[in-house]
Image (cartoon, rainbow, N blue to C red; front, side):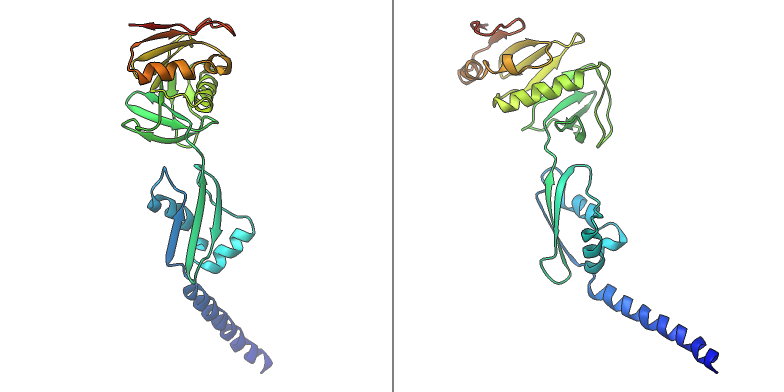
Length: 238
């Protein structure tokens, strides 16, 4: 008799547990998602990244997994904050990795961060982000390091773009030839920079003279290939 009672108790207990789980699941099912901080990717794309897994559908499971440090941040996200502002509501605040510059490859414009990771590709150049031109780009994969055919080219572009950003130099493109010599274009002004491991010294003297030339709409060239500290910067007007 005791075994018979146990035989009936187990299914009853399992059924009760199942009902409780289902009630909790559907009661705390997330139906409102808000996204903050996304600039490069659409809200729909970001939402899919943060609500695509089964445990991301429910507030309770999401909370538990988040507290356990189990996150699924996309590769383009540096950091994220997950909060639950209301009943059945989820808020995702993003801190994206920042695009440093772009590079033209075939018919693509590839945009990468300060570590050389490809964050975005487009068929047309972005108006607000300058880019490099080089025949030594060999391949690219989204969220992977940009592939180049010449050793040191990626480091050269990262250093150059970083220094240009630091000195707030406005530029349109930088062409890097097969020998690694860089030529910057800003409106009608070309600046020959040559090949260097670090462009800090040469770019630190460029902002004022380049800004003046661009603002006055003058066309010409500045040759800083063999620049030495303290030397005069000569703008050769065409």
